[in-house]
Image 1 (spheres, protein in one colour):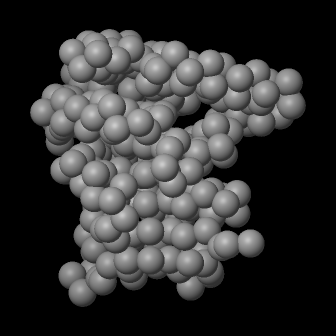
Image 2 (tube, helix red, strand yellow):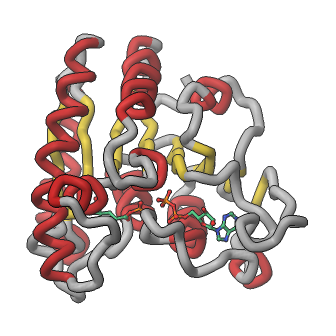
Length: 259
Ligand SMILES: Nc1ncnc2c1ncn2[C@@H]1O[C@H](COP(=O)(O)OP(=O)(O)O)[C@@H](O)[C@H]1O
Ligand SMILES: N[C@@H](CCC(=O)OP(=O)(O)O)C(=O)O
């Protein structure tokens, strides 16, 4: 199997409604697809955003607050619900989950890095689905990934994944932000993250997302440099993941260079 180990990152905009509350239908579909992919013999690590968004929904905030302290509190409030919902649905399909909260600390020292790698390998050997997020409560500016695109790329390298799939609220990478430019055209394959490609990405994400397209391109560059392909796909229909695994070019494929 060419793509045995897959890291799937799902963004807040895919997991929540505009109200900020969870899109349960979407989560059900995603979990069903991941469970089915595991039944086919793939190993899946899920990097899920949404804690801050869900936390905001739980306490009745319409917008994400600016202050780090508030975001941290909302992340803690939201993460508990997020993971318990994933765990409940995965259980229906016969799979268990494990919660992994990471900070950039894992990159500082070989010991921590290797320890995280071993824990992932052990979890995967039990057949469970690791569900990863940043540990926002202890993250400060110096140690935060800041966005889960970067985190997912780090995890893909850490677990030596064969493929990183980033699910977002857009069909792929365009030559300019399609929300601002009606003539924007999708780019099906990117083989080099050049300055020109970087300049096509808008800095801002949607009101619910955090990273925007720039962090997704940086994630693509990082995994490509480490020999891993990345696919950016719309998460609105999680079944599209099957088509990616069948080799169809949907979304945007960021292809690593063969050495
Ligand atoms: N060149 C581009 N191609 C596609 N989307 C872009 C581009 N530049 C900026 N964007 C914006 O990036 C958004 C996705 O990022 P974000 O809101 O952070 O999503 P997520 O929550 O999935 O991480 C899209 O909705 C789109 O408006
Ligand atoms: N740790 C944060 C992730 C924030 C983030 O990167 O969001 P997104 O741009 O939707 O992937 C959370 O769970 O809300």
